[in-house]
Amino acid sequence: MFAAELRDGLIEIEEVSRFPNGGVDVDGVFRWQLRRLYEEVVAGLSMAARAALLRGGVLVSAGIDSWAVDYGRIGTDGRLLEDPVHHRDSRTHPAFEAAIAAVGGWKLFERSGIALLSFNTLYQLLADRSARPEDETATVLLIPDLLGYLLTGRSAWEKTNSSTTQLLTVSREWDTELMEMLSIPPSIVGDLTPPGTVLGPVSDPAALEAGVPPDLLITSVASHDTASAVLAVPAVDERFAFISSGTWSLVGVEIDEPVVTRQAFEAGYSNELGAFGKTRLLRNIMGFWPLQEVIREFEGDGVDLDLAALMLDASSIPRFQYLIDAESSVLLTTGDMRGRIAELCGHDRPAPRQPAEFARCILDSLALAYRRAIRGIEEVAARRVDTIHIVGGGAMNEQLCQMTADACGVPVEAGPIEAAAIGNALMQFRALDLVDDDLWGMRWMVRRSFGVLRFEPDPSQGLLWQSAEESLSTTRVTDRLG
Image (cartoon, rainbow, N blue to C red):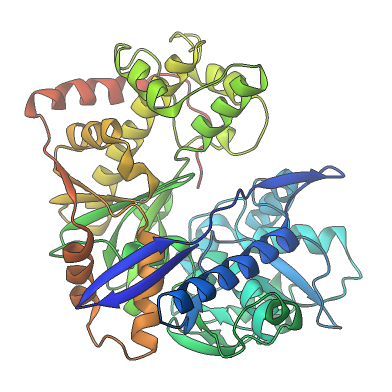
């Protein structure tokens, strides 16, 4: 959680609190610990309010962004029925196949512009309704809207995040016809809320008792964290691609209108709504999730790993010795990540065994996936990419930034690291009339406030990356995301 302040036309952010957040197995279902997460949010808001008072200021607004697609079910009594199910839970696969069989894959994409990913909200809802024929759900709310509801009592369906559900049409309205076709009651959703809407003050008695100010306004921001992060990309013109790099890597470009073509569908691209009515044409790539799981598994075996030292050790291993398809759906779930990576290496390529070998494999494979995604998106969107902006935690990995520049053949600008928090703050500033800048004015403000680290491509590396890509394409490839 971050506190942001606007001072002399520059943005200043400060970390207020940080807490672990992940899924847990509950009776065979992988779930988010929503109640604990809410308690951490309340504690962070209380801390931010106290810190503001100590500096002679006041905390006036808060906005919530998070990952997409997952949701909480609210019962007829207005209470959360259960902790939300995690998108990495495997329950959606039968529903995913059934929806494609009933409607058709191309038709589903044509209606929404969203890539067919088995964890999309649409398929989660179908899986839930299959498991609960007599469902008592009155409303479903995506995670940021759910937390806002718990704080204020007001239900909202923020538009950028709702666009990821595959329940909106290409014109960005609820696809009630599709819902009815698949026996999903349209009554479980409500009016779409544009980012920058002030929802109202905090009203939850428990939050107020914990020290959250009663006059603190909760503002609906571009609540998918990638939408907030892309808002804060410090680009200087439209010819850029972004990589929002963290547990997931979202690789794409910002355009004015969705690209709903067979080519985009078959290549696995998705059209998600961004701030200021923009469209983020992107691909979902696994990101640092496999590396996080590999580290967790080694540490479970008693191997203590330092990330910086691991990256240094990985840099000494010859490139392209271990390669996998970083977009493979095999990597989506938890459990035995090392074994699944070894399986993806196939019989034609050695499999990593040591921590540094796994790290090298994941870094090389991610950079190759970025190359494929950028090259593909230039063709699908008919848009030349002159610069790649890496924002989020991956911007700290200078090795991956340089590899991405070399693989894609264009400069990479890294930073800001906390782009999602900055984009979140920008939308709040705008909602409160503290800034009147347009999208590009905001981006210039970010660039002046935080700067970037630039990585120039090495022209001599291009053929090596092309050869590695061709080599990977000849190995056994499993189903990819989308």
